[in-house]
Image (cartoon, rainbow, N blue to C red; front, side, top):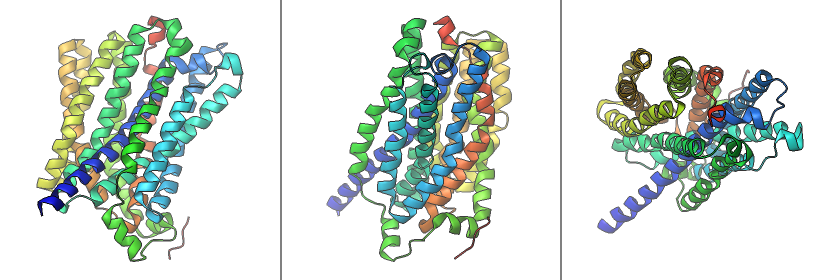
Length: 405
């Protein structure tokens, strides 16, 4: 018995690492691209005859990734519910990480003309497409392999990848913008965080290649219960559940995007804080968020999925007021403290989310159902974040209808 338990323990550790690394890559790629969009891409990939137009165009490329996410969720959800979680997740990771790394070798507008922004748009589309298939598969694979009474904490482990990705991207970009001159950053420094995605891909590929398919989906395959077109059956038979999932998370997602980008821009542009200080505040929130996700997972195992999620969501209601009140005082210690509290509040809700969404859908449609709900809700909620990119300071200047079957 002890030997069997030891083997299972090692298997679960590998599985946790495999799902966390994928979610880390997702948020690292997302955050790095978003930050570079705000500080350098308008100067690299678009003509400078009208800087305002260049800024609008680069924001449009940022939006492309959100438009391709739902499509990626549909396609990867279909594959994940047809051929398995493991191979689909490997493909998703290679696509999103590979697209990010290729952005790091793109020529500038000055050297390649209109081809440069066209290639950027294409890679951004592929990046978003790959991201669309990551989270639903990671949650499905992780929790399908977890003990029933510990689904919450194992689901929360997947969620910690988002905090890790944001922390890694923030540290990387902060180091570059504080150690390189404006000329160095524009000439070659911006390529470094994109190319570093290769390291994460290699690590993720090694880990994911060593894991097994989830036992629950293996039973679906063995019982020949695989659905021919998962997306149609999900939308036909579970459309209310998909809408419920969207409604449950859209507010939490919108807050996360507002806190992560808009508030940072507010601190710099309206309050007058140095951007490194504002970035440090965001980093503090990410660290506390990462820790609180595990608390949210534990609460969902103890209190139940809905209670834990509602608790986190209700606790978030005063968070924007706390955040902006602290910001308006211009007191750095107070801002840091407020961001720590905000990180905890949002982390509890996110930590309970994975197991909640997991239990909304049957195994044969789970990858598709979770991907449809999570990718679409983030697509809607991110509107405030896209528009708020213009609020970010520029450190370069400083440095059917369906037929059911």
